[in-house]
Image (cartoon, rainbow, N blue to C red; front, side, top):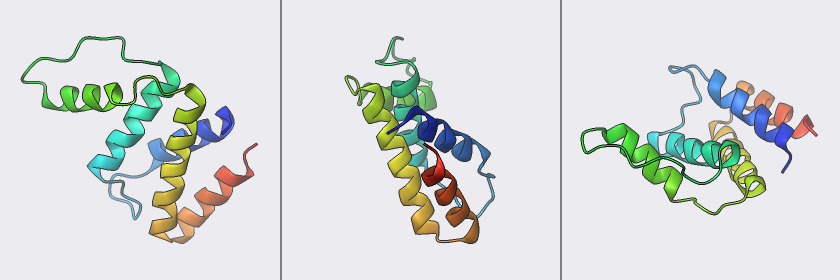
Length: 105
């Protein structure tokens, strides 16, 4: 999977309106988060957030769960998950996004 496809997928995920027809679940959002961090930063390099930081702990735990994943594998998993969500949505907008990703080298 190319870095260009990954960057296109990241741009699409970040541009999705909160109230739009394509709504990744919280679990899917964590999936994007952990593979984005693994692709752009690598293995977890911070300590686990404190007991009352529930969101921070969930994000940290998700990222930690993919420790050791290569950058290329993280790119692929991120893009594949977005394509899965877009295919499931089956809207004109999602079809446009799929075409954009597939057209990227």
